[in-house]
Image 1 (cartoon, rainbow, N blue to C red):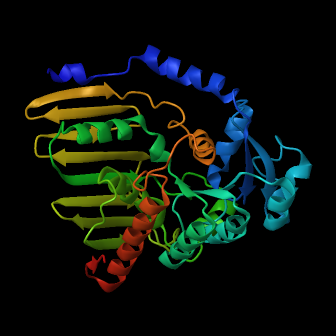
Image 2: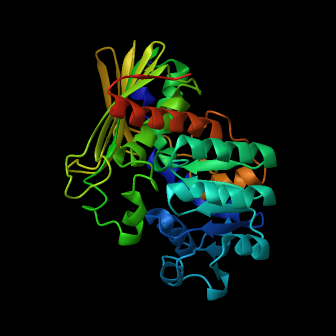
Image 3: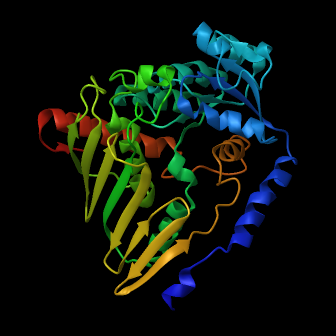
Length: 370
């Protein structure tokens, strides 16, 4: 088959996929969502969907301890004042959400799960799963004890090119994968203008667990765990640097992580010091190479034949949006597999890779994964 035939998904199909979802959202009752914390910059994900008139979920309560932040955040213009609470547990008991989405620090994710799990409320956190491995293990224990889902939301989960790359790999298009190079970074959270309330914990080695290694290193670890169908690596070695110590006084701003699997090497390149924002990756097989350039466009080389500017097939609901996925999972319309990007099992491996990387950088040697 000619490589040109692999180019897929005309724009008309993409438009049809995007317009089909709203009609489906009207068919069932909206998912009752609680919001825990308002300091994460990605809180705009909720605001943007409310502004767009989405009907698949409704925010029934927002919990934030800090009075200033609770009274002035991305959601205060769009929600009634009565849904804002100082106390998380009171919000859960009075509003009874089906799921809670966490938009506080990574360190606070455990607190959210501690409150939600005994009440049978599912949780979706922003990446990474936790600030450290000890917290992640506690979250996993709570999830298992109370039979709730603890999902992790990554921007890259919604990249059509990443899903298309996985399809190529599973079909054997590029043969046996032996190397992945993943690049995730931007100029830095200070440089791109993240809010002071976001920076207050994002740059804290306790509240975030680290700097670029946690903020951006998690993407590559998550994608590789998914592409490798949940296989765990054997060892991790990393170099962490702080190239802008006047800006990032307590955490790294550049991380290179080598992750060793039987027959495959993953290189994670995570940085707060690049001149532009990009999240892309190269996947090498013994028959060809995938270059995932953007969320929609990729290149594919098989031998000497290069097909450029392949438009990836658009993702279909509920796999095209974090809130649609959450609703479908909570309502048991879909099952989250253990190696899926949002899955707790996948993200326990992510945490193992990240914490091993931090340990490796401190000790100056590779850390074996058991």
